[in-house]
Length: 85
Image (cartoon, rainbow, N blue to C red; front, top):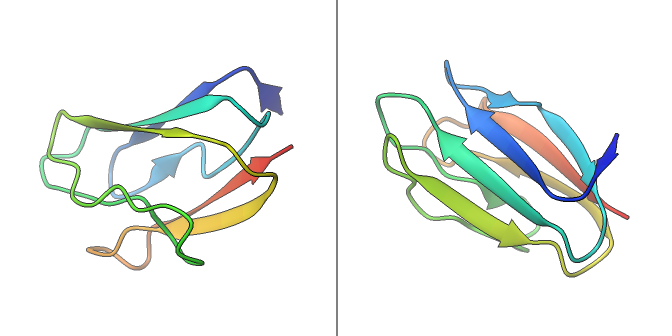
């Protein structure tokens, strides 16, 4: 699925959708719907949201093509994949 920008929700300690493909230049927004903080942290160090408080969001502009697995540093079992085309 390739979208012109997208939103990923964080709910029930999971990213939804867990995998997303976007075009280079698109902006992705993560919205934290959980009652506690989360992060969106690239496992390769490409991006790091730091702590996203409950009810808050974080934006990332996809500027480089590739596959970027990410996780929540507070909850390491939470994993996602961002694919930039």
